[in-house]
Length: 231
Image (cartoon, rainbow, N blue to C red; front, side, top):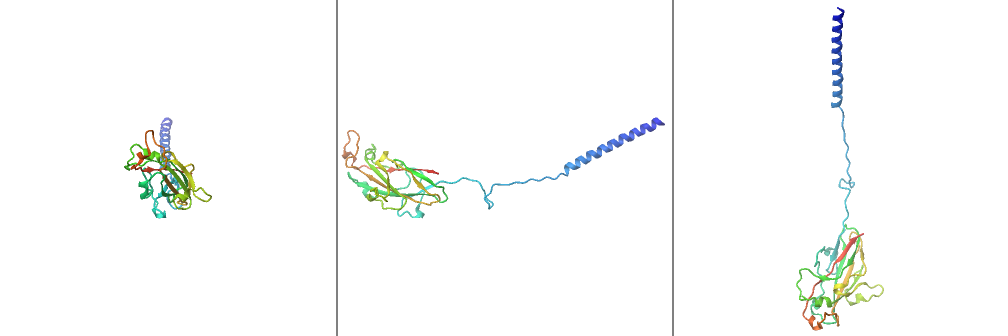
């Protein structure tokens, strides 16, 4: 009998252990399934629900239409660019004659500030001329005057007197760029005015074997680049 009671007791002990183990397992599973979860996100905004990180813009605009009204600035980034007009007399130069044309530059609205540097002239892309050998292009001289206030674009702009526009270029057409940069304020905050003078010298430099008469009836279309950089 003692052996029988011991066997029964052993079976009951095993049963309790199994039940106890099942209970513990059940509690563990239930706790995992019932766990709370949560996440939080943030984003870089501008204080009004929009994007808050980005880049600035830098854009220079030109105006070739005097008196350079604010609404007539345009963007011309490829050669030949905007057209500055030297006038009808420019197609009938005689030795010693000069002609004049103006352009104004500024930064675009919402642009950061920067500076520009005028480069030497090159032939304009896509403009047909009658100067296949480059005789006239190489014979012409150029001067450029500039100021941050509007001025008349004529010979008086090149006096170099105190308070007069600064002469930033003076030499042969294809080899003469500006000697100094000009600053442009951000957000169209300033305008820089330029006057170009192109002259056919009385005694121009000519290639060997050429004479002054070889320049008669020729045409050219010089193009200038203003290299611009923000700061």
